[in-house]
Image 1 (cartoon, rainbow, N blue to C red):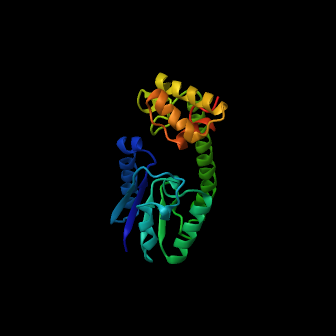
Image 2 (cartoon, rainbow, N blue to C red; image 1 turned 90 degrees about the vertical axis):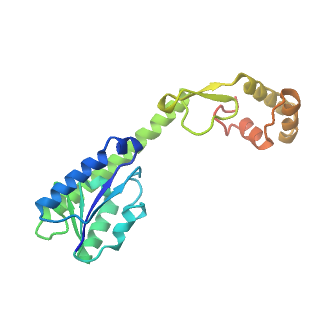
Length: 227
């Protein structure tokens, strides 16, 4: 029989703030309470809870457990993506003779612990709903930051420079490149092709901008849009 702990955090900040260590300490305490000796604790660093357990770098190793093995986790949402993921894995492990102990609920594969199993099923539903709301807030925050001129990551689009770092990063217009964009728009209004505009920009501004990039800028598939 092997006894495994499983910990997960979704961001690098949580890794640095020792959230993984906190989870590990809880798991060690649970193992002692159940008179179990831990074989290994898996640490899932910077992995989103939206990824199912067996598709994670460390979680996939739990797909090869044997009858009699035990898994301990500090919180339901550290291990499972949503209600379906939780109930499917718990059901499969129950049939395979693999025990799952969750902090606060006990052994949820134990038939003599129906209350713990019921609470896990209930919490799995709420955990999935919580994750959906977090995703919605994150998307709304990213949209608001973009609308306010904030930078969401990656290289600056043509016409802009990045000012600041991390969460404070924002896009500021690059005057020379903005002049190029104005020339692109005027040339396009005069009926020039994207390839012709490429040559016009090179001749007038001394800059090489591919016709593909020019097309994206003028068609609006760019941070600054086509206005």
